[in-house]
Image 1 (tube, rainbow over the protein chains, first blue to last red):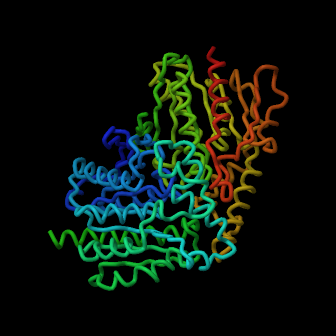
Image 2: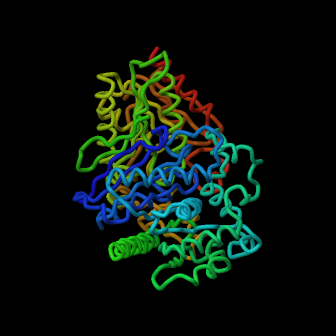
Image 3: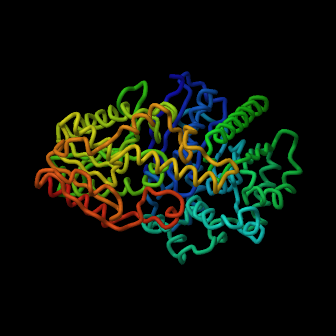
Length: 288
Length: 260
């Protein structure tokens, strides 16, 4: 056994549930630690259990990670107090980093998320100087005109199902997570309503631009036929032009859907993220 | 609730203990909740967490756990085996007995989790009650069903249509040995009196579940049918799915009745 895992309860009311994965031999204090954020309402194991697979692969490479459930998702208790999900997700991600700093001495972090998890990773990264890298997978499926006509066309209905689930907009969430007023107050989500969850395009471009300026390493992963990839091409290429060589890695995976159902595609995804996270570690070591 | 790892430390199982709460507990039975496999596990996680919470509020100690090679438990999907899963159920039941200092054990399982609960009950003769929610009655039919779903999903979302023998279903490995074990799974061949009391509950009148064990002696097998969207179904049902509150409440009341 080359890794060890333990459960943790953390956050203001010690009600956020997380699993910490570490190399068995320890020694992770000088390496960045990775935080996996929920993809929509799927619990912390991630779509197709990808977060678990990634956590264990990274531990074998000497990196610690935490996968956890935001309040109201998975095993974590719903929060009270009427804080927006976007705000709570940032606060809780910061608390997850605090926990990793306290429990294994980590000083820098990689935030990783799929779909809405990537949205939250970007938002949290832009607010915390400790973030040295971000893995943004299928991020920002901003449903503008291009989104609707691009690629999927007749598949948009089932895509929308996925979109709702991973954006945390399923009726399931409304039913069982009453402490989430911003989604509960919405009418049934017949159409994507990006303004409730997503930033404006300008804010998105500005966030990415700030991270580039700060020297944060970015790994952007897309399914080739995904509307998220379309958005990357029309929105993000410009702010990414200012990145220094090697700062941004873009992976475009063929023959897959939004959640990487084919196992061989999952392997390519895992390998890309493994390489990226190791690169962030090397960058940190060189800087330190 | 308390998340923790338990069992063999070289391949620990992830579990969540929902302690008995309220003034009606703890009851004389604790409840082990068995999750289903693959996409059904992901889809139904919220409903089973909600069920565990309701049971705990009704005074039951509950242990909800992930099978080996699934969820947060140790092991990779390619190593999943039915026989190991049966050992996992036994380990979880033993863990709950220790936690509750010797209370009896009821098993609740959804889909393949229900089948595992029934097989464990038949083998151990130690379960005092069984709740089988849309159990997989015939493994061969289940395999056909999930492979067909995989093929349909792949042809819709990927340029490479899936093939039934590809060793994967809807994002999860389906190792050959597991598939072979599932192929021969048939709950009809299992003794309907494996536990003193059993509830077979179905999400939909058209599911096979309620026809299980029709020849059982009077008073052993109760049945209930609800008509919510099955929480474990893939694709189109996903965005409309609700936690089936009436079904969960029925399970809780039935178990309270067993304890009465």
